[in-house]
Image (cartoon, rainbow, N blue to C red):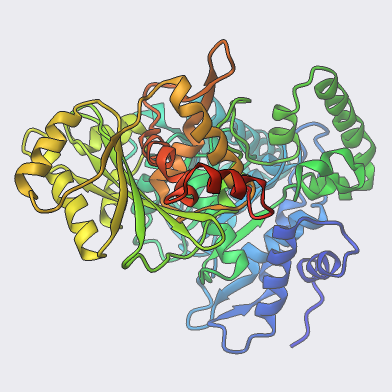
Length: 575
């Protein structure tokens, strides 16, 4: 069957270049068009149903003018995607149960999601009764933004329709649809007890501001028995690369669009610049600001963007502009250890560790914190590959630690990235780490070139090693944790990342540590790693740098002074 609805027309315009779009939007549109041609797909496209939703949303009044407003082409694409796809085995049930939609500020996202919320509230067909629609956010104020827009637009609709007016009742921060016993209300983390919900539609507005996924878990667990549920994540980019939106949803959505993950029930549409340099090219601004397609407001929007751009350049403060107006995720700190883009470019598949030379870096923590043991493998072409493991204390309970650190330790433990202490006290067990390291070395027949450590509690570790493994001698080497000693390893490590000579296994805890790490300097501009907040974890990258302090000189091993000098002067030299 051949379709020619607004959703398909937009997708075709994007794919053929008629509408300028970023890589992720192009991939989303190609996915839509490709699925239409796939007869084996377990879903069917019914655009006439999406048309009903569009017609309803386009009679809702704009809160500024009080008049109905037409949806932009990109908004139509979203509505036709969410309300046009259904299951083949039961076409009462939607295909997409989760959606990630992201764009720069002031691009009509609140108007769009308020329209979706009102449509589901008044006209939802499945379930016919007891629909629960929640407008959620990190704070009560943010959650109220969408809810207040819903109220204003609904009031305008009620003024036009006596039938709808009689069917709807607003009580404080809650709207009830009496005929269907449905409810629409705002929720936030500070609402109080939010358990026991059964959402049909959950809107997570500005999810990028959330420090943990607790709200998401409550909503999704509550909707487990709702076959037609939709969790709608909508947000601009933020400065926290460890936030659940970026670390979990954004990265997962990226894998879906790239074809690395197959998830037919997750809709992903991310409007962002493909490169920071594009902020200097006005013709590319539509990539992150899709509302620029609308001629009637294009001039106003682009004039305001020019003003923001000019001010940011004049103040030498482009970071906020890049994140909020061009929708690119960035670390908040100007003195960040590494740009996330560079670090992510060094992700590779696992190597065969067996029989290799390895440098080990150990960062022992306080007994109630995180300990990290990392492996640095010299590989071909003067490159290094990094992998590792962390050990988690549970003093005060793992759940409390998860909330405090904003890290899902249970998931990381389950996936093998970390190990929970086996002591009832919850303190880090040095002997447990010793056994782990010895098993790693013997299982892979590793040739340990250096077992690097800082001096914190190391005496206990070495004594436990010698007591348990007297025949497994280790070249233990202390790496002083000071500016003078660590500055050069940090510089060389960063250069290695930029030159793609430092590769890694995409370990989530190491990624978090790299995102958290900042550079601090002494009076001589020597470097050390630091963190901005006490709860932020950088132990894995500290362990890596500790090991790299010795690994960086691997290529010189076995050379005398003259050989080293000759090598430095040769064409082969360079990091």
